[in-house]
Image (cartoon, rainbow, N blue to C red; front, side, top):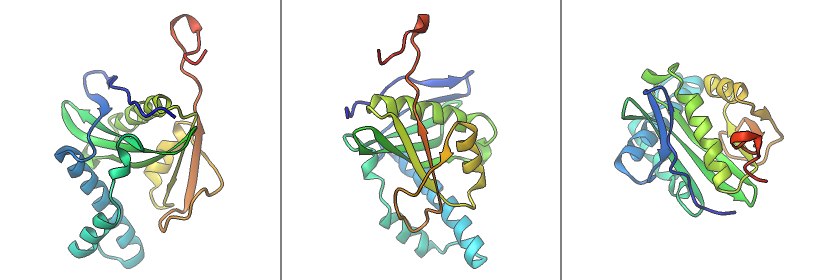
Length: 188
């Protein structure tokens, strides 16, 4: 599997643009922190009827680094709404033809603006550039907005491929080769 990433930006009108980013940059780390706080607090509210404590959040962040979302083992994407970093997603190479989608996040104030759709389009392009023909992911049952986004974009439930502590449902999508102008497939 090749590990190059695409630098093509995707945009919906002038609002959203998505491009690869350094997972260790300040913008990336800020969004990853927001993502983690969002999903952790939803978990703690569901199971313990409270938000996570500062210590629980910091421990969780330390225990789940995102270094694997950088070449050669993956790619990290930042989505910008009107120039501001407001969404992110990561791909981790699992094998020669499969990548795992992880760390998908759109700031709550930007949900409903097309950011998730734009992010997933960029994810698919990045997956193809990594040589993948399939994207898989796991998520929690309570993350209903994310699950709806995935199914709206062609992801289907699949058998479990891992046993992460928060994985409750697994999805997969086989990528169709992109069409070039004139109808020719990009892979042939």
